[in-house]
Length: 374
Image (cartoon, rainbow, N blue to C red; front, side, top):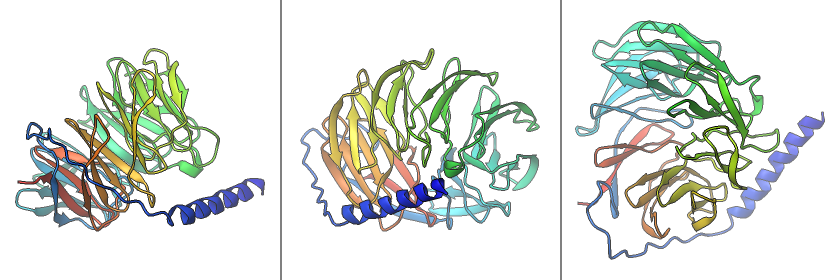
């Protein structure tokens, strides 16, 4: 009874905060930058184009690029191959179960995970299923391949390593009992020299050996309600982790010791270069933090109504996408706004690059290309 009361109070608090924040009007101004050059493949000013639609897609949908083509599955179970140059699509197969994980393609073989727990191996030339593996829970997030092994993440906080040839199980890592309040929020995988890093729905981030054994565990989440570490860890000299309702931290890749810690929560991915760690917080700000100590280098508010679900760093430019369809391009060094585009769509996707274009997918399946103005 007390747990139910806590949940109700929490939801009421969210409604109050939302009504307060929506009353504020935020005006974003583009600043001229005299040093803009065409050195980078994608630079402001940018233009966008709606190239095709694949119908409704899942939360955190992501596009996979293979040989210049885009691949994505939708909630109806259809898997599409998109030619971004011709702005055309081709249905490869309909597996009759929602696809929410990013597909993976290699050597013309496509691997797709469905919410019915089935991992499919599909020949993209013929559209034929040539292998299956059944799991107990939905397959979420992304499918990966590393050193000849396939990696699949399921909703019950488990990571499975498979042989891609016959989909046989090599090992399974379990993070214990999944947090039912955040069960769909498992993070992506970061592959290091001596282990794999990922976050889970209880706010923990772990390092796993390539044999499936846990090396260490660190905590980025705080509390027990609506907590998860679903942003993929990044870094090498230090591993950067973040969570919803928790902290952003730098930890040692050796033993998980916390090097610095900030009370910053995020729904988005992180980006890093030699100048800093880039992220978006739950208040609608985009930040650059010092890699070594976590101090704020710059901070820019880009939305008062909604959230930032994705950022993408290319050259000296940082692209930030809000769930309401505002795409903001910032100077990554100074935090100045260089361009703004308003896409008439709702987003919770990641941002994908292929060649000199970025690609986004809206919740209703519209696929957009982002490129520099000619």
